[in-house]
Length: 158
Image (cartoon, rainbow, N blue to C red; front, side, top):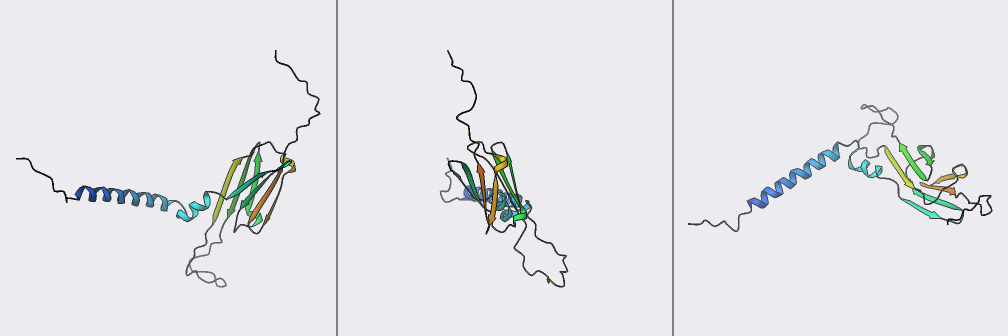
């Protein structure tokens, strides 16, 4: 005689959900072990940027709230612009500082942002300038102008 399975037996589903739960727990454990946790991971993803092209320049605007001007480092190599912003929170001893008091709750952490991207055209690195105001970084990069009246010699392909 053939035995039929119970259509209301959900043990397969239960074991599947248990495996999924263990996998999510493992993933959360791995993400949580990353220094600073998920909140700091969001900060490492990068700053929101806008890149606009004008006739004579490229303008990059990046949101970097909470940083000081001294925390920001800009580098350009070829056509790649790199924005790095690091902010370290002051640490106090567990007993606390007499003047500052002891933390009851501390949610503000050190943050770091790094963003590199390729520019659409070559720019004049020496002529670049940047301003930082109210958490917004604006970088102006003059384009390298190709002189139409250059002394190069055209070679026709036969």
